[in-house]
Image (tube, rainbow, N blue to C red; front, side):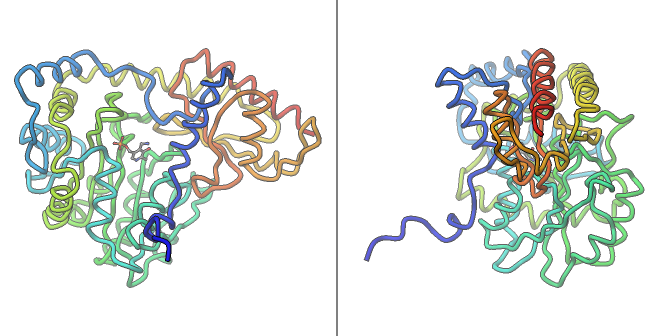
Amino acid sequence: MSATPTARRVDRIQPSPSTAAAQRVRELKADGHEILDLTVGEPDFDTPEHIKLAAIEAIDRGETKYTPVNGTPELREAIAAKLAQRHGAHYSHARIAVGGGAKQVIFLALMATVDTGDEVIVPAPYWVSYPDMVLANDGTPVVVECGEDNGFKLTAQQLESAITARTRWLILNAPSNPTGAAYTEAELRSLADVLLAHPHVRVLTDEIYDEIWYGTGLAPTLVGVEPRLQDRVLVTNGVSKTYAMTGWRIGYGAGPADLIGAINKLQSQISSCPSSVSQAAAVAALTGKQDFIAEMVETYRGRRDELLRALDGVPGISCTTPQGGFYLFVNCTGLLGRRTPQGAEISTDEEFCRYLLESQQVAVIHGAAYGSPGHFRISFATSNAVLREAAARVARACAELS
Ligand code: PMP
């Protein structure tokens, strides 16, 4: 009898499509192809100098050892301050967990709470990792398609009909990857009303793009709108996007103490703690000067608007204006059924993305990866020059289909 190479939970999931796309671009580039890469899920800015310096100083001070499992007290303090400002809510240190990126915190939260057959409501379009994370933890993702006509957002009615006795979580990501959609206070209010009527459901709010926001003031949050939900919401966030710190791997979760305790228990057996040096850098990020965030957001806004202008009127595609984040989720259903100059039929978003890559050397990610076929995602976390050229090539690729 041959040994089974992997557990069923591994066979149940796919490698992250965005990571796979980035790897494909790296390989093509290594083979000498000049690819305009619009797959990137991270800021193209460098980590600000004062943050790097704080890490170097931490190393010089000898902060190179294990830290408490749930992060250093300084970092939890900095996170609590940010949460107070953002949600108008107090989080004691016992209600904050720090992990190796928001991704790890989300995974640990599911691992800590989901048993076989438990359901997790995942509105689509979704961030690629949610369904696979649920599956990896023996749960059942309940995907709810959120129409473009409602700005890709979950309605109270949809939420109400998706909830069952087995529902453990609703995952709410706003501003969203891949659509840039964000909920208004009124929309959050109506979701909160449904949630109040179903006390067994917890909500994981993924707020990793909260500061990359094109609206006025702060993006509304569920806890801010309905403080009575604070004990049922796990707020997840991190420093990756706001502070251009994807490689430092620091994220956090804030929620009920029992859940945070369970996350920390798992972390104590998995990684002991997040990187000490990165935690010192994250303290500097959260407590240091914040003015570059507004500059960065203005840069993204300029790119977003230029991209929308360049793609406006291109036959077969249409765009919804993102309210946050650095992605544009393009509807390409108008192209399906058309033929390439070589005569091949484009019948899916994935085929269109392959055609775009092969004919124009532009890499994007197909919408089916986000649970929303008939779309593709463009990341505008890249230079204006690359975006301008890429948009012209997308337009050419569309025009050459017949
Ligand atoms: N949530 C969303 C919606 C994301 O797009 C990402 C990064 N791609 C993450 C979480 C993970 O962020 P981190 O680097 O903190 O793990």
